[in-house]
Image (cartoon, rainbow, N blue to C red; front, side, top):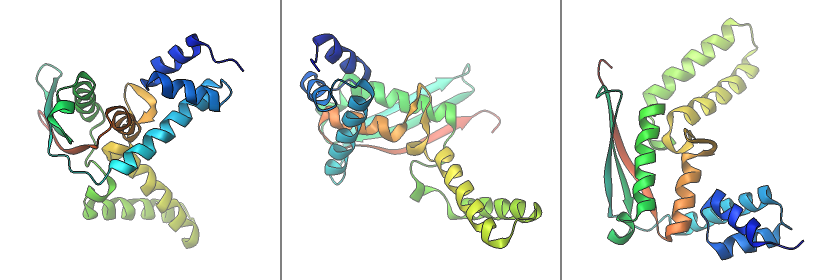
Length: 197
């Protein structure tokens, strides 16, 4: 199939990937737009994994205030160089992450930061619910495991569906930015403040 400049432009608009990367992805997938998007996302993940061990000592602290001053978020997003920290793409990402935290209310950046006591409490609740419904013990364990996975996807920032595009997780968004910027980027920590909470 012939890859047209219009197809490349459309893919670039959808993914923000480089023009030549878009052209190669379309060539490898015989012009299939959805497969090309998946291919670019996989390449972004590979780039992110290669850069994951690099230190992120630069970055920004982004603030977001919502609901007439009733809800506020501060998030620290790190990168390797001051140059990247000053780019519009990086600033937009930090702002989007702050809005995500305001909207979705995660409790931790990643799974390993979720407090063990919180997980244990959820596990006990799910177990009691399953046992009360008369499920056998071997089935209860599978149900609890499934519900814990779902719970973690809801409370871990990186696993949450991005509020502006539910087809992507926050981790997908981060991987795309890492691939585009060419250096490691990390969401280090956040604080969410809400009046009356």
